[in-house]
Image (cartoon, rainbow, N blue to C red; front, side, top):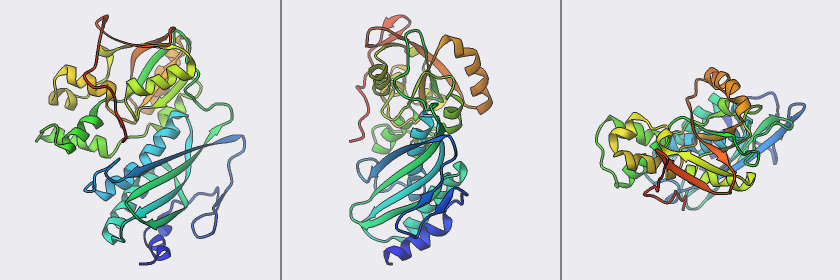
Length: 318
């Protein structure tokens, strides 16, 4: 199958239709028309076989995750998803794999209204690169650099599930029950908090998505905002599946250092706490206060007011 046949067969006909796409797939460039008084938010992620995913990862889940991790970046800045490009590098043309991959990709693209407007295909070791574009009202995008002393630290969802799911896939943890499927599912199919991010635009002072674990990602806010932070580890939101599968100390370490949760980590001033409750309740997204911003430039972990040291040092993508 030739390149243009591949694109036509698996991607062109499935692309989401948007009125702001003037020219999509099929020309040298795509042309889009941004909304008035909106800024463009752009993010790019590459997933490489044997680095970011195992060769036997279901192609449908890989298609889904390839876009989900980019959507999470948009969510952390409060942006509305709009358009994406896709670059696929494949060792060979496997039509069943492509059919499954495109099904997973367009499943999440259609849910969030994302149009595929272009990309590239080439032969080589399998990798997937997605560049996503979103729109955010001018001067409202969330960043890592706005946290202030006294702001409260929150996270959405639960933490550590994806990292435990990965360790199950690696064979480091042996689990043979319904919790196994849930935890692997959290690794394969993270939930980008797009609506929650948009609700935080006028409330949060800073935000980031959790791709490398709280301990690593909170350091970006600490550095960008020139502040310190205290995390009360007993407040970390843990799923029942995680707590049933490992002991509490291990569960807390997964929550602090496990990567690829793709939840939102954000800070909110005291004056906005009431509004936060109302805004996020309407999204249906669970959120938990886990600590507070302070001075000093350091991250401190406390458990029942005593220093806490996690057993793992942090997540690395490679």
